Image 1: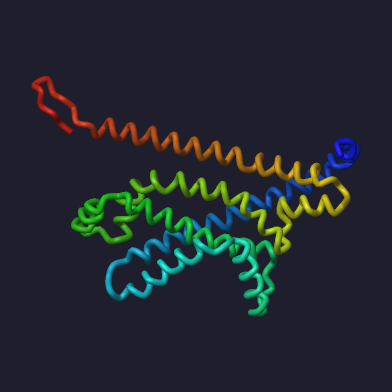
Image 2 (image 1 turned 90 degrees about the horizontal axis):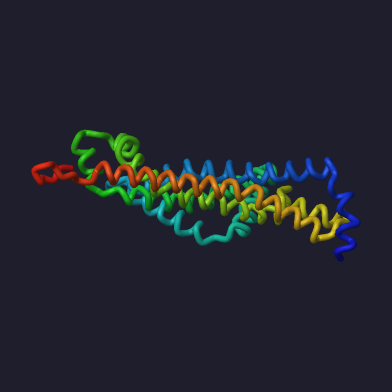
Length: 246
């Protein structure tokens, strides 16, 4: 087996194969960026509608809650096949890449929407009430009061979900999307050993995920540092006369 690996290595390490792998890695990253990026935007809309008060919005709130609870429990691969067959049944000729992106948007909206909801609820209700008492609109409260505080809770888990989903895009190969895992299958069918083909894919997933993971760690450290600075600024101090001020 190892002799076969050494024999095929010179044929595998060509500029053509390297370009093909880079193209597949780019498609993998673009699927995640487009799907999770739109899921992040739609997640905000979902949470905004879900938390809108008033009895007129009860059906909307129930629909949004049902959407989150349902799609957070649906396997991504099943959703991929469902979107594929539904689009074909409706007579739509979307590309397989578009099918994968639509599926990622659907499922990431549910997951990231729940992350955003938890972040907004981490801000104390007195912040909402005080801003509303100052005649802020609901959008103004979110933009100027709540979101600046909630970002610290939203960003780390949302970024972690983004990094994890890079690996989950491998399931898109089951419907024919030519991403990293599908390219590994292609090289195997072309005659290269599975160790060489999928070993290369494994390394490229690591190359793709590790820098993003480090970026996520850096963001978390910066958030912790900003929290520490705010805590020191908000901490009460003692005057020379023994009085505590804030």
